[in-house]
Length: 420
Image (cartoon, rainbow, N blue to C red):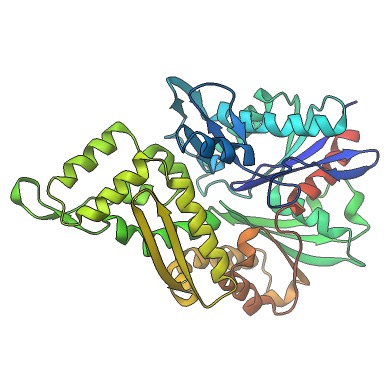
């Protein structure tokens, strides 16, 4: 029997943990990744095969002078009925096939480490891909289909916050009522469950889970807010143009598409570029729109998002930081304070707070009833998010590895499920 694997297919980063020899072993997916035992969830397609994944996708993209297609945040497409795939150099690729390519890359790394074929997988999934149950179910079907295309034959799913709790549970000395929060790149998920060392080895934990909730809010939404506030005003956002001599505001849809990686990838269509050329004939902010056109035409999007990520990380440590970005003729040097950043992301953090409070209310629990709060995911490091939980739960907050705890829990449970 092949060893089972747990895979955390994330919006920004992915990880895998093998259950082998009675224990768990993190899989070295990507030796060049800056985060140990993870790989960026990136895919690069050039004009000719093969495709590249993880940090190799970044290298190939840069080596090909930012030509081709670099896909990021593909998980965000799974619940979108209006997006069933995209054309890549003349060939239509369904979204399931694109995701399957990445999962096949993960599976190859798993098999290289295991030294044998691996066909059993426990995949993590958010508590909610989307608030609409129909779209949530669509996302789950697509993920399972992608795993099957990638070569897995036995596929099971577990909620990501429950998986995160499984890795944490082994460190406990007694039973505790725990709120598990997974605040990742694309979703924020929460589960209240009973944890204890005695329960850790049980296969059926349904009775220990009191309830789950989640919202499709994560780090990519925080990135979007930075772009709206610090970047778009320099790319012609909220400017005017004068078609037929009548001054009117520019439409905002194209600018907003730049704010999210999964929509930016589609923003440089021939139709949009023609529309930009039309605006430029009478636009008041000629310089800003020319920069926007250059950004799209020259595929500078990934470099811009790297600059945004650097600013976001800096603002978690400093009161004031600067977004600096240079590419082609584009030159940005924009200061932002932590207070401005927190004001910008307040609506999204408010949704996270409503999800947590709503879950406790639905379960007839008060914050004091929660013995410990276990947080994981990169967005849990944002100061405003940390304050949200500190205000409700005080010092009962525990944070473990924000990038690999879900995969660790999935690996633990994969062994229990597939060996039964």
